[in-house]
Image (cartoon, rainbow, N blue to C red):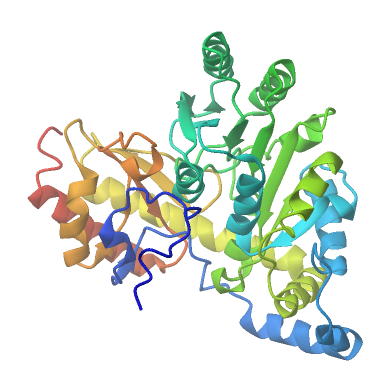
Length: 398
């Protein structure tokens, strides 16, 4: 049977990806895996076991379209307490990781030829979804305080002058992936004002908001600052409790709900998973989350120290106050995309900076994640990576 002529025309466009990303290596600095040293495997199992007598029979039926009611109630309360977002549970839908919620919103709103505004470098998963839908992604200058609102407004004006109205502004405003930066409260307010003035909704991703390590307290989410239903929001418990659990959620204004309902709110997580997460967070969130961030602090500091020891001073690294990743800038002329094959051969994997741009620029940039390995492994892996880069000539202009 030849299926080549039967393939749907609706498949996403194939986007550029380095083949080495899928290769298994000893040292994985390319994925924001859950901190395996703090994963609550026993407690998750006990929480699920405790819930089974009261909720087990619910598994006989299909779950509610938007997911487990108790978990959505818990999410609503945590958003109100921690992120300044006050919404009814009807605004919340559970998804297969944050990517599931992102994909549902992208499916509901992005058509071929639409223009989406994003940070100077943005999460490759969402970028690839946008490009797969044939969207035009325009990157907006970004610094240590997040997306530059003056540049954002200027970009919108320029597009409007050419008859183009952006479909949305996509931003990871907290511990941004890949750059690790957090948008200041002042800039968040400016972004909301710009969104309202020009009628361009904000799509805010806060998947790393639970991972505060140190520094100033996190500013509230933009969804809580907005009074015109102009913000859609996603986050997840995947990174916190286990990537294999695949549990995220979206929060959308009332008028968006019927649109997503036509998509059945995308791919829902397992109801059993939702039960376990609900039971665990109800009992253990207040002590568990600080234990994770304490571990991440040790790993972040270990990686920064190892980079300082093995990489030349001309290599610059962010110092994030939370999250799971560092962003690096190597000397001009360094090509982290082409060097990845040699790094993989040596047993180390990272993400080249050009993965996070629609135009493939940023060859001397790179992202390193520190969540998965223990400190000794981090030190070993960074030493190997520095040796590879030196042999590949990436430090020649240092």
